[in-house]
Each structure stands twice: as C-alpha cells, then as structure tokens.
Image (cartoon, rainbow, N blue to C red; front, side):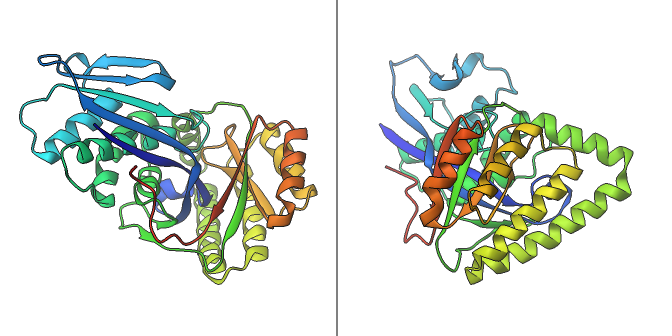
Length: 318
C-alpha cells in the first residue's frame, strides 16, 4: 500500500492575466489536503478508483477517455512503464472545497500520481508530476495556465509564466494569510471563459489590464523576497481593483474583502477564478483572530489560516 498527500493552493497575484502569458505568484496551502491511497486488489479485478468526496466510483477499463482521474492514472502508468494494468484499488479523499479556487482537482490528481509512483517504488519528481496533472487540468478548466498543477506539485511558492519553467522561491520572512470561503461555488472553467469573451470584445482594454497585473506581480515578488508585507498588502488591493475591472469579482467577495480590510488586514483580494470561491487577506499574526472574526461576520463559510515560510522539506508523502 502507498499513501500520498498534496496541498491546496492560493494565487497571491496574477490570476486570469496568467492565462495570457503574464507572470503570477502562487503558494501551497497545507491546511487543506487531498490524499490518495493505492493498494493491491483482487486478482483479475483491474484498477478501480473511488473518489469519495466528489461521488465518483469507476473502473479504469470502463472510464471514458476524457475522465480526468482516468487520464491521470493512464499517463502515470505509461510514465512508469507499466505495460499490463495491475489489480489496484485507489481511494481518494479531500478536504479542499470543490470549485472554490483552492486547486481541488489538481491536488487530487497530484496525490494520485505521487501515490502511484510510491506504490511502484519510484520517486515522483515535481516537474514530472506537474506535467501529468496538467493533462487532467484541461478537462477541469478548459484552457488552464498550468499554475495550479505546478504550485501543488512543487509544494512551495512559485513564480509562474505560462510555457516557461516555474521558479520556486521562498519569502524573505514568514507571511500569514487568512483565507475565507464565500460558500459560492464558481468553476474556474466558467470564469476563464467569461474573461476570454471579454478579451475578444475589448482586447485593447483587457491587454492593458493584464499588463498592469503583470507589473504588480513583479512588485509582489520583490516585496515577498524582502519581507515587505505592507507593500504586498497594497499590491493585493491594487490587484483586486484590476480583477473587478475584468468583471470576475462579486458583491459577496467584495463584502468579505472590505470586512478584512476594516479589521486591520494589510490587504485583501479574491484568489482564483473569482465570482465565488475564496478571498485572501494578508495579516499580521496578532490580527489573525480579529480578521477571522470579521470575515465570519461578513458571511464567510469557512476560514483557513496559513503561514507561508521556508521549509526544509515539503510533507508530500506520508
């Protein structure tokens, strides 16, 4: 038997613009994880997959070619050089909200790939895991940038530009985020499609917004490496204004963002596709409790607090 985990993720700066070749910064969230368990099954039974939290149970032999989890298993087996499908039972669990901007699909797939590699006694290098998981992301998101699978596979903050090698890096000092779930499910595929439609109608305006977001991403990386959290908070606020201009915010998200700011957050913005899902607030440690309470009062359905800091290793396997 082999077990592996993978974290959720948040995009700190650059969502949507990243689809159009601009840089973005994302970080893992280890306070919510997906878990995969692979174990031998009855001889002749083939490969069965049970994804408890999304209500999916199927055999690989009967899965359609575009079944995302089936795609992941087939690609992982091919990479491992497994010619004949073994008899396996795969259980998948996750406490990452679906369609909430925390990378639930990519985390499930990442845990699955790592567990399969571990079962066959192989090390799953992050770049290999990311490439396999990206193929499944196409079915979840339509035209994904690749940022979700990359940050989750690497398990640390990354500087990401579509089509280029990711640059993992660490902040110059620990930073604390309060993540608030709006309770509104919003599939990324839909918001990415909406921005695509807007871009087709107003190309010049959207390109200018993407350029402005790219500039903020550059400033955000510098602020993170210097541990300048006041500046990073200002960048969060500026990025939120630009996301509103792309019509991916919502009154629900803005109510949460305003609640966090009023409670003393250094900055706050939506994270991910928008129109629902989560907002992130950058806070000083002593203000976590107050900001969390304000977010609950503003309607947050769930609160996560994550601390992003240098690790000697990432707890990818257990």
